[in-house]
Image (cartoon, rainbow over all chains, first blue to last red; front, side, top):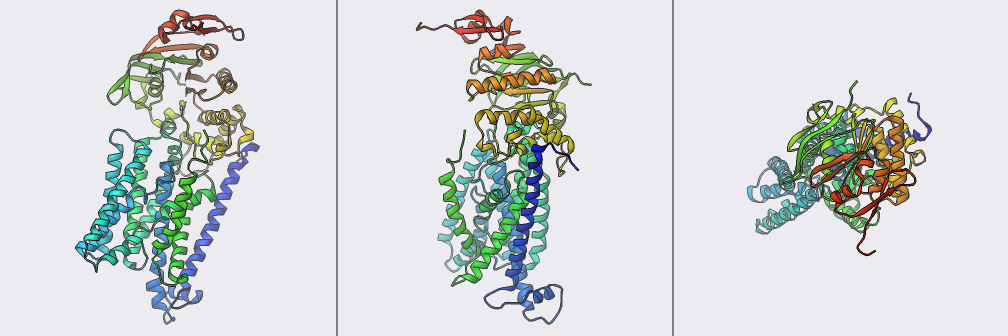
Length: 342
Length: 263
């Protein structure tokens, strides 16, 4: 056991508190998973039936719906939620700015450009659209980073370049939608809002694998991220190779966001909201990678449940999360200078 | 045991196309407090950055015990050289003890909790800076002087033999300035930590420094003890300012009174 000088017990206390909060969020996530697996407008199945189906028992009523519709949908919601949450929180921590989320600085929109092009002009299959979205998201992030760091890196420049790129990509998308064939536009729009309707279970193992590996990688770099959060000068003097670490962390986060976007489309606001919510609940002792991921998964599941079951018509999950994001952005912009103390 | 002799040899350094340092040689006196003086734009902050490897010299080298610092493992170097940057940034809402703990980075292994040594170093650093009571306070609630003490504690937790400080008293009122400099003097006297800082205030430099380096236009123009350096002639040379020098009645060090056109 570590013997503490009295005044440092707070460090251990906050650590225990963080673990406790993680358990609570995890419980919440599990309940949301159960709710999404059992309840639905068409049919409600008892939890025991769901378990039996998942264990491979035959002849249960609703087995098809549970196995082929609800299970892939729920898995995609959980892992894309984690991916958006972790990636967003990583960007926000690294750039020390709550506005610096990948869906605000152009990465997700970069994915969308290629996806919309694929849907409208190439009539590509879902799989092909995903691949295009992934590659284009990575390329967009690379281009933004390259433009922003020509002549010296600065976090503010990266954010502003990203916002500019975001505007450019949005213009491209609007232009394509205007010029596109009328009967294709709805499917492009559906992709752009972010939805969990067209999830195919064959793509899920890869999603799970990528999310686990990359989230693990970002957790592994947690101490480095904590150093970088103190600014480049401190990070360097603490013995961190600033440029190398920063680029590795950015690549990890970008792959994560591009991958998740390629599966579900850009579910708005998850990347933007999860980090700040996790920080608000858990404090700033740690990088909050895990808590932001779990919060992201919870929001996606809850929003999807609301969109599917609680409203007069079914809405894609992105519409619901979009409604959550807007007021928070306003709140942030109004309060951004109030809390500042020199 | 290493001696920790830090030496800059013929340093030329600057930013992209503009060279700021034009061939500077400095050997940091061991276990002493050194102050780098100079007017705005004289290159003193650039010199500090070069010593701390924040800036790579275009020509020349910085050596620690004869070894070029760019060839030393960065975590090893981080256990010898610490820095308090001019603008310290803290993550919003972080608690003081958690922030100080981040100074332990060079000693920590990946994905392991703080060790007993880490806790000892953190508690020692915080006791030294007198911020025990603030351990669980949020950094945003602190006054400027308290914040600065927290950041110095972060550097102390790093347990380096050499500590650089880039204008540690800027933005602080006179009482806090004296308080911070007193703490640094004690740090130097009790632990023998070599301290190198950039200061703007000549009189405080004169009082607290064992050794002064004076820079002008990217060159080192004179060095020595305060008594040798703080003279009317040198002040005229360094700052282009007429002044008279008297004795500081508290510390018996030289004290300059600037001349004025209006009086």
